[in-house]
Length: 147
Image (cartoon, rainbow, N blue to C red; front, side):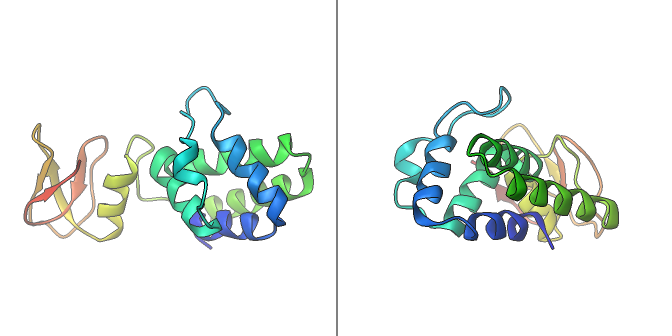
């Protein structure tokens, strides 16, 4: 199971009031390395939209960490522990191909199987067929602009 599915499963287990509380926690500074998500972006968000916004803002690894922290703050320790175990099992069974320094937008391009390099004007170009690199190198062909 991939990270978005793990996160969605955790959020789908929450009753409506708990889900509202979870989104409220996302508007706070939960971890030092994670900026809060503005309330207006979460107010009407469904569970799957909330997962997308978390991954967009934090990346997959931090989104899991934030979710575990929030579930713990909500005293839902068993849900937090279950997510942590499922994520750890996923990491040990399927090694990741992306670097921890890769942004969510670049990770999306890697998932699409594109190859290239990101230049200073945010254009990605290249035509190789393997994923390699870290930081600002990703896979792709043609010109792709990241805003």
